[in-house]
Length: 343
Ligand code: SP5
Ligand code: ZN
Image 1: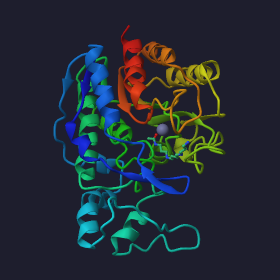
Image 2: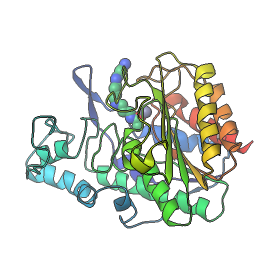
Image 3: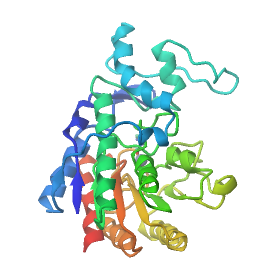
């Protein structure tokens, strides 16, 4: 299968995040993508190609226009405001009791207005990386639409925590959601998104929650005790015409292959019953036993089995890279899913 990759991800570097009360180097770092690309090459998965440049209209079909137009202005506004910190980060959010309808002028306030946590820092190269990541997803979607059985969008930064008008959790543009919408606008009647990242894909759920034309299935750590906490619970099943088209599989800390794969089987049965024209897999490998921020126990030998099960579904598949922070093994695990799919 072909991989789409852009070197522009590397400009999104030197980020910081709050970890246990201290600002620490970001877990979501450039070496993640480099290790995956190296493994794609050493396993001879197939050609690695560059993305085509797309305008922002596809992104604006799932995100608010004002949100997308804000993203390229963040770093210039941060610098113009005279802030000298190494990364632009919010520190105030319009939560209950405040005016969420007010859009202040100050950049530090706008960052909070357009985010749900402090996990989406900006540095000088962040916008170009965000844009390239979205281009990677759209280019790989184009390959699948043109008849490829599968394609791998080696996206960085990831996307599944980004909602219609907010960033967070290392995510800015929801690459999988943009691709799913692009499939809908290019001949697919129904699309399934299967999100296997350790964390609940709250952005993807929010974007499609009231829709029946995009089914969303999420396997993740129980948000009662794991990020993103405030979405991803089992009773969230969709709204209005979307009712029954969102399904969450929250699982406890310590979950290993037996329990995890039972949830995958159930999700796959729901995909088969839905009968999509294409499946978008939000491919996070932070379910790995040695992941530094996660508490599932999947082993490297489990990942090819995931790919095998997804291949048995039948429809063409777009794999979109999401999380995974054990950088030494991230390539082995992510590419393991893809080789398992192909074998
Ligand atoms: C795409 C994706 O996987 N985003 C994940 C965002 C997670 N943000 C919260 C991280 C909390 C880190 N806690 C550190 C515990 C270290 N033992
Ligand atoms: Zn994750």
